[in-house]
Amino acid sequence: MVGEGKELNIYLIHTKDKFTKKLRIQLVVLIVLILALLIFIAGYSIDIIRNNKIYKQYEEQLAILKQQEIERQEAEKQAKIPQLTEQGKENIKNIYHSDTKRAFLTFDDGPSSITNTILDVLKQENVKATFFVLGSRVEAKPDVVKRIYDEGHYIANHGYSHVYENIYASPQAVLDEYNKCNEAVKNAIGVPEYNSHLFRFPGGLVGGKYADIKCQANELLEQNNIVHVDWNALNGDAETNNLTIDFELLRLQETVQNKNSIVILMHDAPAKKVTAEALPQIISFLREQGYEFKNFYEIIK
Ligand SMILES: [Zn+2]
Image (cartoon, rainbow, N blue to C red; front, side, top):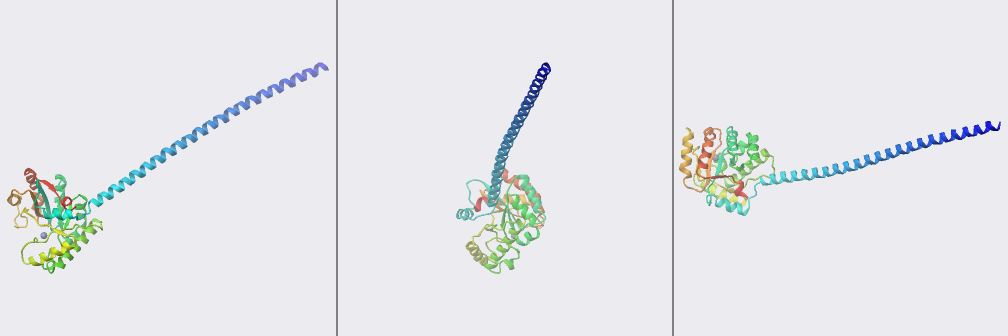
């Protein structure tokens, strides 16, 4: 009986040992699992923190780039809004004088059906010109005026109607036509602050039936911070109804002569298709003569 009790005890001890060993192993496995889980969570958290940081930096850089782009666009927009400074007025006074050879291509009486062809040529030749637009024509073709503006040409003012009896009825009528044309331009290009400050009298400032009115009107314009410019060279496209490219080139050569600074009168009215056709040769001729092309953005500011 005593022997049996001993055996039972040994059996119980063995069982207890086995149980404790199993428990220990399970405990160790559990601890290892918990540790692995903790390491995984820690690693994952570090990743999230790191990614958040990178994302934040990326967002900050993106915000800086967006701001720079807004500032660049604003500066570009401002640069295209003419500001007539005292220096600008002085430059206009001296428009026909320059140490270097420079040419201002100017187109009056548009926009019309041929203006887009002229713009295509200017784009191809990488030349910036100046367009003296008519308010009534601007209202008819605002999309073309927008293109003129977007492509970096200068939009100047040629009044609204081009009807001499109307525009030269009084000095105030000239200013009214200037303002009416300017309104049309602002609407067409979508820039409420736009003012070209630059006028060309239909028929030119000097002489003619309305010489006195024009002279008084010029003073009134100056009081309103508007300067005027005529021309000292032309392609003769207002001189005949039988225009040819050769005729235009000849008139250009005759009027350019040996002038250093030339403001060339041309027209983009509907009937001046030949002017659009002659333009590549006009540009070539002027380049061969050593002229550099300018528009009034470089003068008015
Ligand atoms: Zn005109």
